[in-house]
Amino acid sequence: MRDAYFTGRVLTVAGTDPTCGAGLPLDIRMITRLGGIPQAAVTAITVQDTAQVTGVQAVTGTLVAQQMRAALDDIGVDCIKLGMLATADIVQAVVEILGRYPNIPVVADPVLAGTGGGVLLDPEGVDLWRSTLLPRVTLVTPNLPEARILTAGMVLPPAPSIQESMAAALGGHGCSVLLKGGHGHGHEIVDFLWHQGQGTIHRHPRLEGAVFHGTGCALASAIATFLALGSHMEEAVAKGLATVAKAMENGLSPGRGQRLLNMFGRVWPCRSK
Ligand code: PXL
Image 1: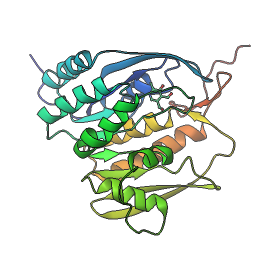
Image 2: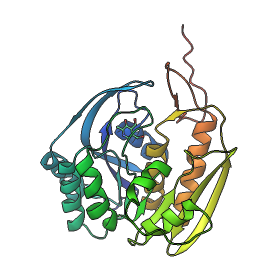
Image 3: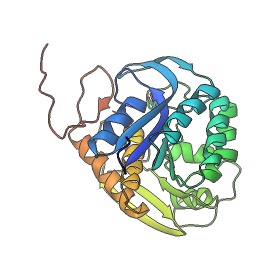
Image 4: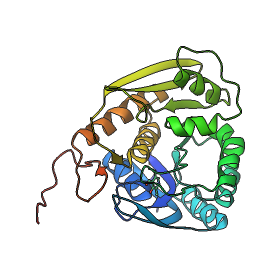
């Protein structure tokens, strides 16, 4: 017999990462940490460490669609989080599935290239992402380079800053937009939320000199989990940003490259070497 009612069910559609510091494994860690129920559809196997990406093997769009249906049609899903989609074939399959579940909110991190380099979405996939996926998502969370790619060819409305202008242009497709300022300059990071025609600015101090792995994945899955647990959009975004800021403050460098988020709120006990 099935238990009567669950909430906080989040389906992540993303690529794997052996460090578990980004992508699908990090999403599962974040959803679990925040009290959600994770389900996952794998789009690609990546080979990477904290310094570099050395391999990517995508699965077929059909297989991604089948994994999504397995989650959607049995346990059920309160919010879908999209990360690395790897190929145009997968973008197409995901758009087709989302069309069958029009009432489920979708938080989409447009993973066009990782901080560690490597192609995480092929060029035809980028075009399809913009033309067919963007109009269906509830919240899109680009960083500045991704926002530039996604707004290429769009008319940018007048606004006090280029960030606000790009957010408004993307929001013209009907979705909410969280334009992340981490790739900008200055001692402060300015994130800009465009939601229902209104802009909200979130500011926090930049952690100088720290290059992190997986912050985009962590933020999108935190927001998806808060939405799945019943928060409204502004609240989910504010709580998501605070969660990731905390995990960055307590960040760790267990490898030779980028720092990883501390998902425990404490320092790892292992100190061998
Ligand atoms: O943070 C972007 C990202 C998403 N998904 C996977 C990744 C990365 C960055 O490395 O590896 C699987």
